[in-house]
Image (cartoon, rainbow over all chains, first blue to last red; front, side):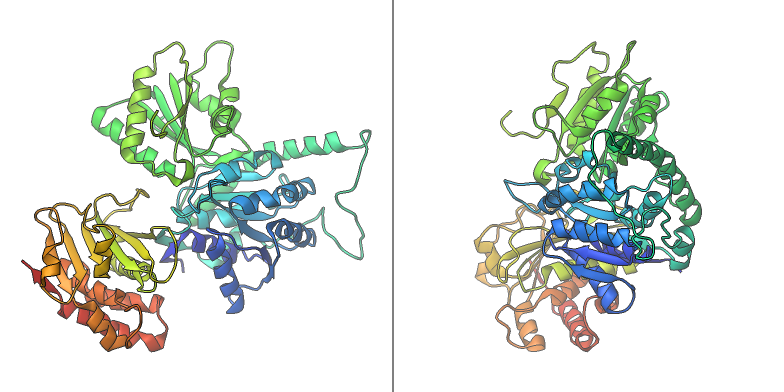
Length: 396
Length: 187
């Protein structure tokens, strides 16, 4: 029986990993990820989860161990945050380059200095080029639901790529809220055991992985295969979302969830926990002021749903991104990706980027409402000179 | 939606108190959310923890800017700042203090705040023994139930097994009930 319990986002991730029956869990503690590790170790210790915990000496080694375990055919899970994730960076390419569907919870935390345990998305947005699928979630329930989904997506033979489930530190990881813990039998049915066919280290069938090659061999082709796999993963993410909804009654929209798009003149797009605030603002402005405003919650940052968002947003006058991350010198990473996909010869929506919530600064309902109203006033402008807006800078 | 802010010192159990109260609200069929304010986690250092509960799912993850209820588990915290500075007009304050003494009259509050005291330190010493930092958290939850009458002390007791080993349940149930019975109003 599914049960509802008060859980933190971190514990929801641990329950998700348990329900997915992960077999190997290498990890290294870092705030705010540490309780994920503590809870999984508790599950292993009390016999609720049959898995091997490998306490590593660093995050770099964690990903090395995860690669090795996954290459042995074991369903592998890990979790990290911030500087720990950046320390893994090199080995993230190894997992995706060898096409190993490791799943990792990224508990988002600011990359310092200045240092804090609070969150923005700068650690994981920064990993966009590592060929990992990245899905951003809104609350503890979605954290739990996405761990089994992540394995089903990554392990699909059309995909075979590692998957990161990203959720904000503290405001998801340490907030305790009601979460439905899925029924194990139903999860077992939804997610069969991992039986890899291509890449498995086996003494009876020797194989070497990640070898040196020269320019006339296959690097270009293998990278292109990763691109094709990432493209195919779009359909798989949607299918898995459908299958999950059919089994458990919760659908999240796959690559992104769009609401009130028909007839919308302005659309607010965001990701992570901010989706809850922005959705509530959009709903209020529609219900109480009758403003034609729509809402998009972006879930997949990689693969970036460029064509799908173009289809969704091409009719709007202005699209606004609210994101807790920035590529200094350019703009918000989501805004930059959205710019290229909306770029058309004939006409494109006005595209505006709001950099918000850096360093864990609170983004309130009123602030988002003011942003929505400001952009709504600007929607007919032919062009704007300040598309990238650092919203909460004091003294500006 | 009701918002509760709990002030304590590291070791007093403010974070656990917030979690127990949230689980108690949850067990009564409400939607609940609880979280600590992150700072330096050390014994004796000031700690703040929050609870929100409501009849409908809670959307916000913002800070609590104007709490309905403020609980202060160590009176000396008033020396650093005024824990009641942002309490909602008409809100409820529950302060660990032995009585209606003159020190209490120096607390500045907004008008119409309902002020209560609980001698939680004395009760804690009686129940848990003399600890350097008195463990007043569950006593305060009993006081919460008495002052607000919206979560029952039975629900608080039902929430306790999620947080305490079996041999600590009885003393904490007693702590909740003593907190309930010893709340005092300050006019």
